[in-house]
Length: 137
Image 1 (tube, one colour):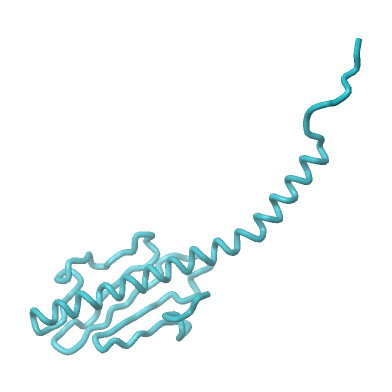
Image 2 (spheres, one colour):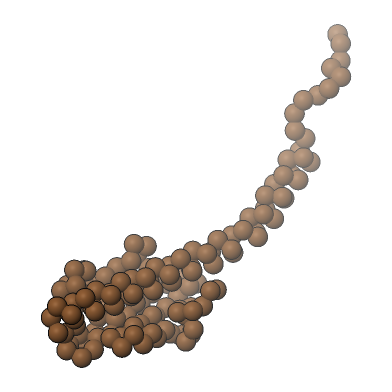
């Protein structure tokens, strides 16, 4: 019998090194992914509010008053695609309205930028931080 000169396969040590490298990469990538997903949800809420504001201005030009979400063609409440934010409109009348996007989930993002608002004068508000409209993180 001849002995094989080369043994093919993966040793346990090589396999463990690969597992450690994958673990390190995952530990770096996962927090970045979570932050990216949170920013995407916040951008979705801001886009919804700007869409409502645009439709309100169009409705105002035709009817000389601001309208409800149903009159604008949205559901009441207007729910985001990810179901993270609900938009409601308060006090639509001849002079003003206030559209508010409220975060609906109870995860780690709930304490950060969970309320956005815009009114008929274009004033943008947010809570609990005042810079949520311009915040990049």
